[in-house]
Image (cartoon, rainbow, N blue to C red; front, side, top):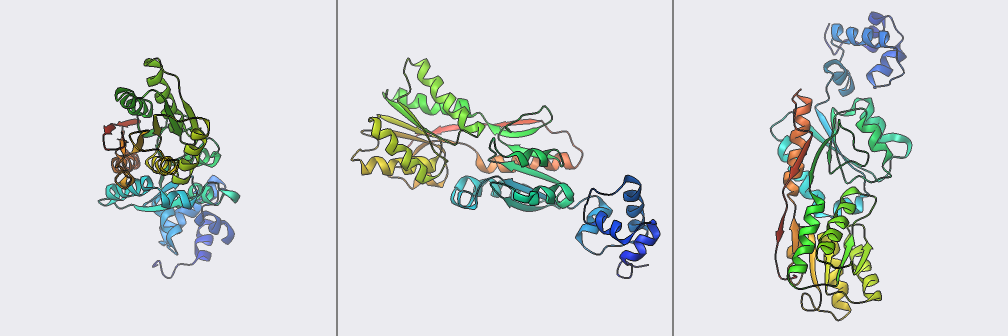
Length: 332
């Protein structure tokens, strides 16, 4: 019997179950006994029943799709060059494979729609970047399919696979550069402290200052956006004038530089500025931005490579650490 002639009723009859049970299995529901599940799968194989993608996935046990899950709102995702570079790296790594990329962007998952899609067989695995302490649905996804995290997950387990950079050492390097050029009143604009990377960058900033016998001039929190960098800089200036500023993203650094300029301060003469990422933003500032270069394309590429290795039964390293470097330009 050909796939085009087999019906869901024939699958139900061959499996000895109801039509609704076959429908639940095909649609990925877990409300089916193991015996019924196996009977339906056997009937689908015997009858070559392939009504849609879900059934094909059931028969092969694969969707040949992976998800990139970004727990952010769309404004942040499409406004930050970091994510564009990550996606480019992922698609580059997937180019020679049979896998398609599904992009799932949501700061929350009301109704568990995204979680259910993943847990019910929508993809074979997932890549997760930019996760926060409040992203509980990420843990549920990681329990359901093979996952690779970009950056350390909030609740790290020995079984997690991670691609990351050393954010503590990188922020220490940025701050040390400001110290080396003679600055001592050094402020920082952090990322959202619900993210481990943001906390690590604060720690690196503090460590470099402590080693030099200096105290933090000011610490203000942003959300990696340009507008938050400008607002954080205004709060810093309301309390005093630093002679240097380390911003935990290039976008926040650009926003801060605009706020400094509006306050009548010159970069780098009055305030030296260092950012983080070395994204395309770093070359749009006046003067061009000194920054920490993290290999964003390589991060995406490495995440995808590790997941593909897992899905093919390989044993990749659980933690992949990529190098960063200081890029010195006119702002510091």
